[in-house]
Image 1 (tube, rainbow, N blue to C red):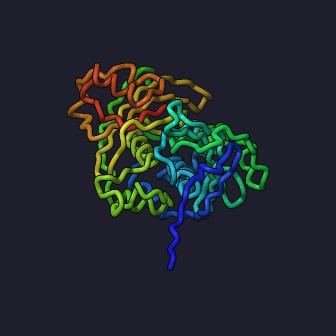
Image 2 (image 1 turned 135 degrees about the vertical axis):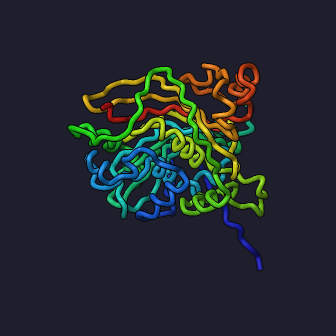
Image 3 (image 1 turned 30 degrees about the horizontal axis):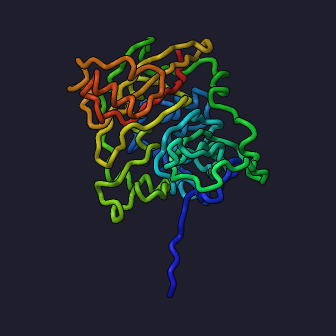
Length: 365
């Protein structure tokens, strides 16, 4: 009998700008999702751990972690889109657009925005918009993504063909942000917080591994079907890579204790420098780029964070000179970051996993 091997991911032979890909996954979350998430990604901000605090912020239940929604948005799109890509290059403008509750059901959609081969012609870069939608057809999360693929076959310069189907409505309007709701809160509950000042550099003490079992469980739960994240038969245990969304989430979770109370955030951009394998230990350092009071009750803190790979932050970085160029608000190519480390900070050579700039919203009093 003749066998058939299914192929998933974007078909570069037919893909064109404007096309909208619908994920086959539809998932309803309950309280166990938050529990499993916070067992791997510790939360220190009370809006994600305390019903009393969350209701004092105007919500009707504990907030679902923003990083959890980001990973649903990313991972649900793997089967129809990124299962055929080489690398995840980076994210931009990732933001929550609606309040999320236990019992909500989610689907995701991906729009191809821009496609083109590299100057050498040996690969392509594809820009996409990713949307997470609830059971009411409301946008709840959105992000922009850059991905690295095999070369696009001829014709490379394909005419944009905007998808005018039913799913196009999800890409026409931006939803309400949680910040819009928080603006009406007259007084936030008391909770521990640390004053943050411009140019302050924080060496986050926590360093945590991302375990082999955690990687398999979360990849399965979040429908990340790319085999490089879990197929040890094909890649060997030494070839498995933790997906970028999980790495970013653990880096931000490590930062949370020193930045709390974070009630909302927008990821301006992030990109990966060195890959993380299961059992690698992840740490972080952050620099406060700006602090702005946006209302009588709220402040916006812009932060640059580096996710670190197998660095004992307390033992190795307390007296180390960290180049300012690594902690400014510029995004740099991995080769540029490694050149800076080789020249000025050997201790971080091949040990920076992530660079990210985000704005976090906190009660200011």
